Image (cartoon, rainbow, N blue to C red; front, side, top):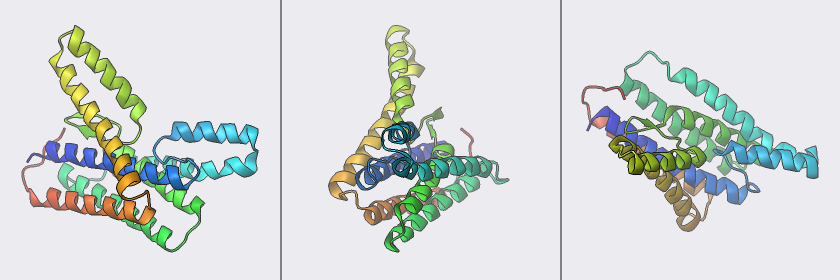
Length: 221
């Protein structure tokens, strides 16, 4: 199994995790998302005008956390290690973040703290795990994936572009994993935070074992 293949599988599973966590926050935090910051901005601006700052401010922690997570993860991508080792470190840190969030929930932390850490996690995830088959695929925001899927389907049909057809498949796989994550979280786990995050940690531990277990020569995407 090549590094590129394991990278793709990791992104698919992280997309599943992001869907599961979004289902949890949507149900338990008044319709908040941790990956779709467009939705959070819309709700924040609407509530600011219609209900005032005292209601709208609760949307800010996830936005701030997201920005900080994306900033720090960009720096983490430049760690001076081989592709494989750096990827394992990034995945291990993702698992640590999940454990921290799970701990804050179990300790009864306030919703602003939980949303901030989950926003940080989301910004981190969207920055470091975003490749399927060498194609950049967003693992938490489906708007761009849906657009790119449709664009590539057009090129595949009318330009007979086989590469576009392959890329459409990559985008579709990400979209499907995100939806499956939502369904799994809402139906089987009832969007209960500790359960959702525990499953996410188990998935990440499996991926780390897989990355460590197959010691082939590292390959860049």
